[in-house]
Length: 91
Length: 451
Image (tube, rainbow over the protein chains, first blue to last red):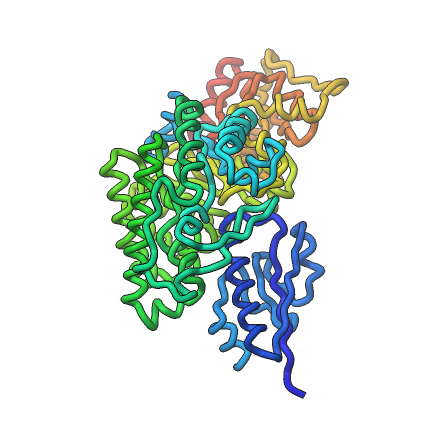
């Protein structure tokens, strides 16, 4: 059975403008990747309060937005492009 | 020195009587007037009402007329996704959807929402701007380039650097034109807000951002205005490069240590601002947390070329009382604020008898030396003095986190935190005395009493 990847984009419910920009670019990356691969799904996890980060398995840093793949954090506070994500998935 | 003069002096890196206070009110202003963010950004009347309300509630020294980093992109063909409680987001990127740079046009006063924004800005400058410094915020050239191209920009910086240089050249023209429209509308300071530069290395910043930033800030200066560079996110590695961009000052968020930025900016002769924590403090903290964080910032920033501000635009739902707590600290009315939010009836505090000739009494008004760094340093100075002079000195910390501390603060007539009072006389306000200075004051007090 081929390996399946599930990504979680963890975002704040009330972000500042800079986080809004990063959130959306990351959403686009995840959307593009999901559209081009059958082994990839994703969801948004919105947190309303910083203490909720402790409920998210695999989240190591409190810095958001964060991306987790199969509950392993691969980015925090950064923009991930589709090429960077593909590189991560294929390695 | 009025509020506006205070901000302008600080931006020019001059000494000021106190740190000016500039809350970055963006979509939060919508909450203040009871509308949603979407409605707010589409109405000049709402923008003016929101800013007027923010000034009334938060008593700032300066304020941005608008905090909207999507405005230019929208006017150039990017689609926006609107939200009720958040700033809008760019959801399409013309340059990754078949258009070329040649297809794009520099937006003017009649494009997109510019007519609304310019109308609001003129009215804000003519009213609020009489006494407060008004910031005109423009989207920085790299963030705008990212809006136009999407994430392809990162690989294109390696694969097609000439294309990115062409794009940066174009977004720089847009930035210069937007800045000129805002300066014409009457703003005092142009802030080039380029948060996405936190995503690139210092090498890429030097190659793809610095030359363009320099052009923008040189143009602002040529028009007789001041220019600030705002960055959000972990841009610590780029700070030195930013200092070389000909801006008058930098403003940063909590991802970068304020003391690091202070030292770097001072080295380059720039002013600096920031970095009250947006989420854990402003959005989710208590008024006391906000006072604590603002006090820490003010302690690091000092009174030369420093502007107290949040790290980025405040979230829609930031509690009003949190921002008011910071305003009360800035204006030396913290005791009154604490009293109004926490009635003090029935709380009795007896101050020492300062005429007692056998001792010198030190009262230290703090937020709480266990959680507030400047308060801790002040208490440490007192501990050292107490150790030196033994039982000739009696000291007490009055923590205004506790009701009794607020009562003591009011009784002593103290306005600022932290403060040292010696025998009932305020001696050190928000300044940690060095041992020699403190010894001099204490010895004078002892001599007066014949101790």
